[in-house]
Image (cartoon, rainbow, N blue to C red; front, side, top):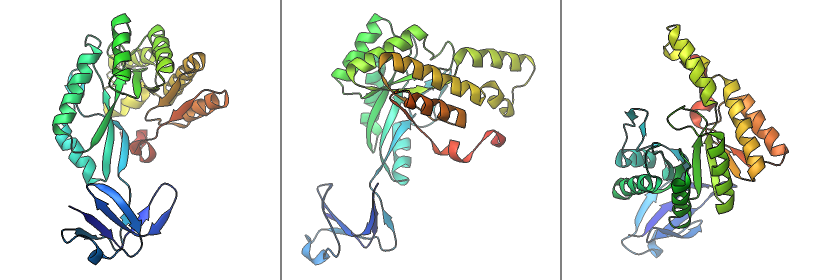
Amino acid sequence: MPLLIKGGRIVTATDAYDADIYCESETITKIAAGIDSGDCPPDTEVIDATGKLVFPGFIDPHVHIHLPFMGTNAIDDHASASRAALAGGTTSFIEMICPGPADEPMDAFNEWKSKAEELAAVDFSFHMSVVRFDESAREQFRRIVTQEGIPSFKVFLAYKGALDLSDEDLFGTLTLAKELGVIVTAHCENAEAIDSMQKRLIAEGKTGPAWHEPSRPVSVEADGVHHLATMAGLTGAHIYTVHTSCEPAVRAAVDARLRGVNVWIEAVLPHLVLDKTAA
């Protein structure tokens, strides 16, 4: 069914202006002021957007839906999560595939893909997490990129014994990413330091929410960004630090960029409006 959106103010990445939008077969075919509904096919749906802002569909590049994680599971499935996304204007997302160290990467990719294909109400892609990097896993990652078109890897510099990589495996992942031309997204902390601090706090009986931040302070995140950037500089890989949450981590990324490292940082809304006092 054709669709005409009339009277709205269109907002793009570079501009804002008043115009109407006409769509056929789910494709925008005309953007202009004063499109007459009488000139459209009789079955055209007309939406009055007077006084409203009209945005392109948003893209969320950092999504966890199907997430088995250290003995827990995310509450959403692809049906509920994608419908929630649509309610907020998000029409595409990139989900993190997070297999365990014992899982085969290709099996994990096929599992996540099948769930999304069955239930998702929006467009989707994936970041492929690398939680081990032996020869078999490396070749599977190569196929996932070259045959399935996945544009990025995900690595964790946190969660010791569950998702973290050794430096040797991190270096190998970055080297493969450079070869394949994909981005490496990264959760930047220091798995060893966090594990030691958590054990100390638990031994002291300090286990409430207020002790989460002291177990992984801003210096740990900054250290992770610096470490990742050092490895990226050695391999030439393109890196993207996810949910960057503090000024020292941002400074570490900026310093790396000034050294010629191809690094980008991500900010997510909670880190823009919350700090440790919210615990």
